[in-house]
Length: 277
Image 1 (cartoon, helix red, strand yellow):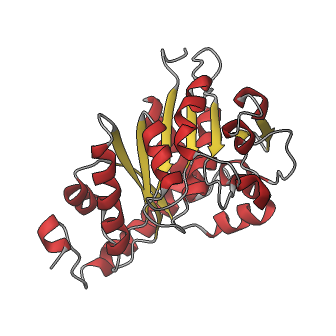
Image 2 (cartoon, rainbow, N blue to C red; image 1 turned 180 degrees about the vertical axis):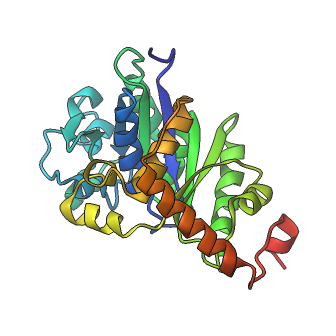
Image 3 (cartoon, helix red, strand yellow; image 1 turned 60 degrees about the vertical axis):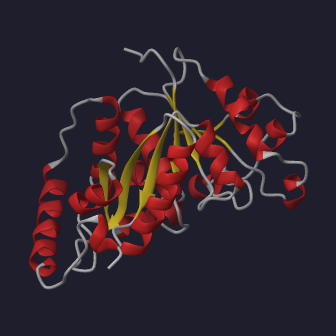
């Protein structure tokens, strides 16, 4: 059964290198496993990555063409490796004449609940014009971070900008979780940011393999720990049940117990006050 509205979700981060594009691609593929249609738009116009991650490099049209009024956004839709996406141009000349703040106008043209359930906006990192245009265009925002104190501070800065943009909800996905003593736990992150952590993606070497072969890890390694976490994230977004394979459950249990053992040896902030001691 289709939702009543197409959800436009900004997938953003306060800093690069936290795995934002990996989250966007695998979330889209995971939603597909539940019968949902998700479109990714590469909104990182300066340094686009979506095409690289799924092995697509030639396009009829890009988001650059759309923003310059040279193509309809529907014509810029492409498909590769099970992912429907709107690419950004890899040509430096195509950065000329781009106005990111017009982005919202074109994204709204993809609102079609009969065909598209989710539009995932893979943002540029930080709080520049490209990133803020995504925050402005999104109905809700998923902030991707890693479980380390400096990155959580970046989440707080993004949260303040989101609050200034109006009535938008935001959620947090913590990526590359190793359960080491230097990492913050989800409860502490929620206390500090006043936002729900809706996904915890474990550090998984299979992600490196998926990047090398240019396929979503949910597709090429469906029983891996990271794939299970992405499926859980997708299920939570659409309020569906998900039963993971036993092998993945055992792996995650072992990793979590190992993290609990070593975490007791190190103090980590759990409140806003402790965050800035």
